[in-house]
Length: 290
Image (tube, rainbow, N blue to C red):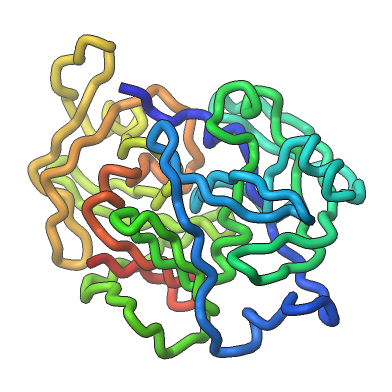
């Protein structure tokens, strides 16, 4: 079993739209159709293809990574091929709490599902991500959260609708509406769930290969993981996992000794998204689950 851990080393960042560039702001101002990110799963990680300038690249779709320095994380090679302009540096913290300084850039434009988006800010990927991740390129939460997101792993798509769109034909997000919790980190989708031992705050993470809880949380709640598997992994299988009056159990969490953000204690990952269509509505601060 492999559990994705490198998502805490990459960084997806915020988007700046420039009026006057073809189609750069159309998605922000009109009630138009969605951009579809068609997914391919590599090592349980969702990747999509976009154009950075004229070059097609594969990028990880990650609703939990990134901060306000940019919309994308890109390799130096991709940045140079797109004619990126150096803007300064960005600061990031990886899973063990170590801080890194990385160059940040402005990319002239990117193309997503035929839509041109101008002046996109990006951070150069860490060398460790280039060596260990399925792709060093990441589309993070500061790009994704500008939209109403429909995550449909069963159909291998993530659809990005303009947030103000009222009529989304063919989209059934279900009746379960789970509030997004307030978080210190901006644009982070986190919700509270009740398990028999207490309440846990979980991040909605498309990049996590499994759902997991931090080891410190398991100890705090006096949870006893099941016996370790042959590869040493330990699991929690709460009999209930409830939010908004709905029980999502059975669910299995991997217990990992990770240093997480203070905003959450674990993640809902691919095993959850494989079972449910999930819609992230940042305007209304809620998550809808079918």
